[in-house]
Image (cartoon, rainbow, N blue to C red):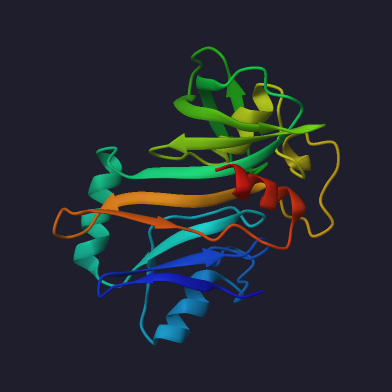
Length: 219
């Protein structure tokens, strides 16, 4: 598995994470993670600004300087960072667009997020915007947008509405993928650089997978 650099400035580096790799070290102390790999490659400490779950592929941003870290995190807090994902979900989504609002809680012991339609104690509001891209025989390709992301938000909300992500058995998918990846891909991120100029970075959709290539041809 290789980490691809898709953008590089004096303030940050944008990379594409393969599925199966950690974004950063966790309690397992796995050294095969994006932060450690890129820090060694660039020979300087890097700070992870965005993260992806281990089975998810796509864009990550790593800061090279503290001023940019603070600047980016402020944008994120103010809702100026826009993230877009592609997902292939089980079943046929019967609407072209949807804006879902739910309430969720992260169970740290189970490392899983639980979703409710109504407010509950300790549950946080979560919003997700979805656009249907293509209906296949047993699946639907969708584009997903969110400004901020809670733990497993996309995975949990899609499962809650009856359309788990293909391969995501943790959230109700019928079967896992052979490589233990799931069909969720962080394909685009938009924010402003230090000069307040809008920047868009896009990941390269995998070309070795038939379903992802169908998605690539439709967007």
